[in-house]
Length: 223
Image 1: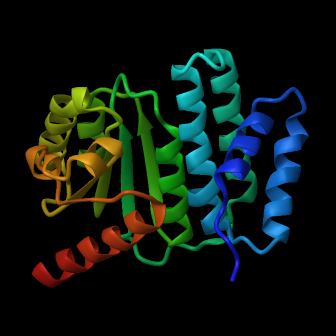
Image 2 (image 1 turned 135 degrees about the vertical axis):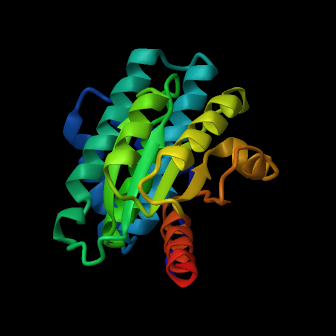
């Protein structure tokens, strides 16, 4: 049985994505695939923990903001390179998702991961990062979405997320739009899901794809 990605490998990968050689991290990632790790495992077991690891290094003053920015940028590049989203054909127009990072939230890599998993599960995904509530409202008013996902990286953003969700429901072309929230704050405090008015929370990409499908089925049954 293939072992999971180790903390040592996450630390090594973190150093490589911040290194001067842009190819080093790609070579490391390809070697992990050659060892038998699936892309899903590497997305959630290597890339996501590495992004969190870079943030921890910064908070501990073990690297500067420029290093972290470079590292996350390279993670995003790898995500695009290895994603097979372009091979997926969306067959159900209801499988459209709007993923939102509210203004002031700069922890965006996790949202990119969610988008990748949804696309690989045959969802049509639209991303809105750092836009105002009014723009989010216009998007759901002009286009049909089955699901909206809203990220929250810190409890201090609770009111902003709640206002965003309330506005989405009020403006949505789909009156039954389902809302999923994600972020460490919801993992640590699951009671916040109801407080912001969401239907469910998901802790990672695979879970989001499963929850989104379940909520879409519930909409179809209720229609």
